[in-house]
Length: 308
Image 1 (cartoon, rainbow, N blue to C red):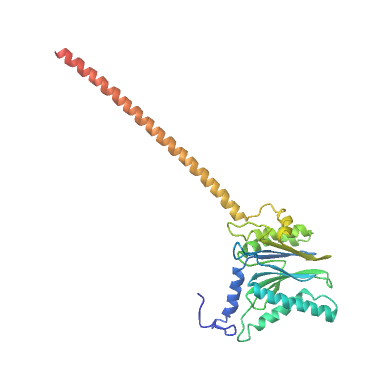
Image 2: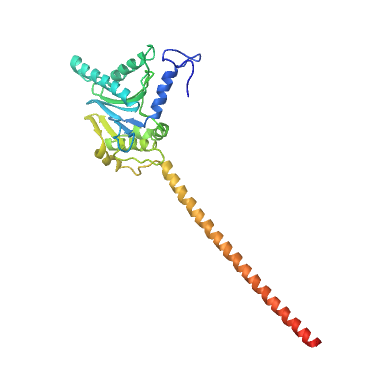
């Protein structure tokens, strides 16, 4: 579909200055299920939508713990994410062994960014087909951070971010509620932060999908809060705090369908009334015609009798 003369490897530029294999890796992220991250002044929340290949299979793991102060959410190729998460864990252990302190979130993200960027300038390798949201709490600076990692090796810090399929809907929700999440008077609790993240994730759902404890992962980390991951039945406590488990588009469509059905019923009633009225009018006309014919017959008989 995307075949051209400049996508055989990741080190050849097109005449317009593009690296097509890097762009293909970004497309792989868009095909993955959504992941959302939100950061407040004291905590970082990561939530993700899990998929299963078939009904008989288990759900793919979407959130991975790196250390007690850090975790990642992924969208794209899970095997690539597993390789990068193992690399991050090694970096975290190295920092504790050599420097006797946890690795900072920024240093961890830049380490995998450098690793990914090498694949874009080395022949015979391909870019990682996965995007990561890296959330962590740095005790040294008493601050929380949320970074987005891309296969090109670029890293950006966000207050709120979303990656994966239909992630634009989640970003729109975060933009609308940014003042509530990060405003000068905003002091969200862990529960409120997770609820906002789940609301954003809910807006990325497909038409016939709902948030359940089976397809949702939730994690939280922050000040005085070690990284905690909630899966399966442990997620239900957070889903119960939502006002709805399907996105607003689905609910609107459902209301429109109900209205359409009501309109159809009204139209049917009007049609029945029209047909009934037409039948009644036809019956009255036939009766009047019959009466007129009888009157004319009687008058004709009287004329014949007078003539005789």
